[in-house]
Length: 107
Image (cartoon, rainbow, N blue to C red):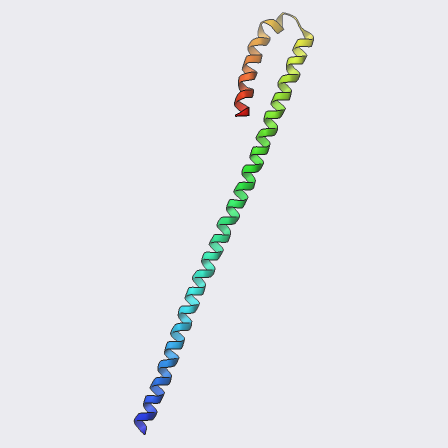
């Protein structure tokens, strides 16, 4: 009888040990899962921010290229209206330089 009670107590303690161990493993696994989910969220958030910044930079560069083109056209018209020898000699060299810079901005 005594042996049966001790055996029964040992089995109860064994079950408690197994349940405690399973609970500890569950907690550790859930901790890792939550940690990985947080990392994934941060990574996606960084990608989203980076994509938004890239889009903004692209829009800014398009605006700069458009403004440079308008500036080039206005400067050309101003020179054409003012006329004179400057338009024929120095103006062409400056226009070529501006055209090169404008092409570089477009790319």
